[in-house]
Each structure stands twice: as structure tokens, then as C-alpha cells.
Length: 199
Ligand code: ZN
Image (tube, rainbow, N blue to C red; front, side):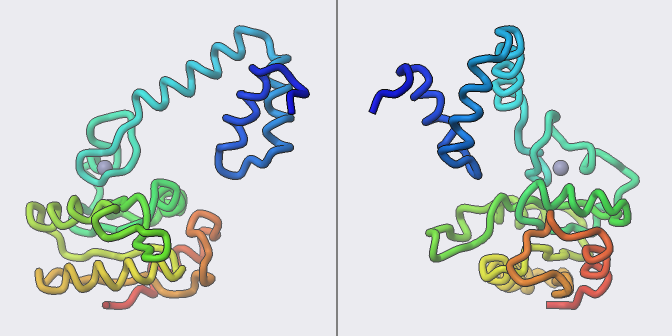
């Protein structure tokens, strides 16, 4: 069905392949872009490719950063002996927004999900274990989501770390089941952190 030009069709298709963008939104965005001044379109495409080109994983905690080592890992005032394990950079940002957590992080970029075929080797666990072997760490706080995947990941991490003798804790389940950490308010996040229990 060729209602539009081939170029518009391709643009709609590309946009619709992005998460959270349905067919109608893709069409609306495509027409909006077509009508934008050319220099704004150039700026938008450059911003996208610059971000893709220049953002990489922190060599220490694996979060997304413009630098080789992210500002949190590079900050000597942070407590480097406490590592909070989160599923993604957005969860890290949620905890950072509380301004109350002084430790550092480790970003897994996912959670173990046998249903979706995501195994332990698909998330940044090797990097975490390497840190525990090479840095002085007192506590690992597992702050994965309270979804089935998050809980499975927490149990797996606990089993992995236990033999090292390092303390492993899990944030309290004041967090609604299946709730994404990034949508939870700061008070709840802090309560979950303070109420953490040893695994
Ligand atoms: Zn880092």
C-alpha cells in the first residue's frame, strides 16, 4: 500500500521500530520531521549519531558515559567499598536523584530471564566479579527490580558472591512488584535502601 512516498514509508517504518512508538505516533513524527526546517533535521540527526558514537560503557561500573571512567567512579569522595548493582543506567539515575547514596554502582544492562533467553553471560556479571576480585569491597547491594527477572538475578548474584565472603544485601521489597525502579519516588527508594537485608 503506497499511500505516501517511499521515503516517508521508510521513515515511518524506522520510527515505528523504536520502543514505545506505535504506527500512529510514527506517522505523526514522520510528518513532523518532513515539515521541520532542514537545519533542525540536520541538528537532530547529528545529535543522534554523536550520542551513538561518543557514549560508551564506563570501564569500571559499565554505566553509559562520555568518559572512559564515569564521574561517579572517578569521584574519590564516594564510598568505593559499597557497590550497588542495578539493572540499567536509568535505575542508577533514580538512586542518584535521591542524593543520599554515597557508594558506587555496577550496571548489569539487563536481568536474567530464561523466558527471553537472557542468561548470566548476557549481563555484566563477569565485570562485577572482576571488580570484587581486584577492589576492596565491603558490601554489594543488589538493587535489581522486584520483577521475576530481577529476583532471579538477585539470587544468582548472591550465590556467586557468597563464597568470596563479601556481604551481599538486597533492597527491601517496599518497591511494588514488577515496578521499574526509575518510576518509583525517592522516598520509597530510600526506604528500600535503608531496609535492605542480608542475602
Ligand atoms: Zn563508572
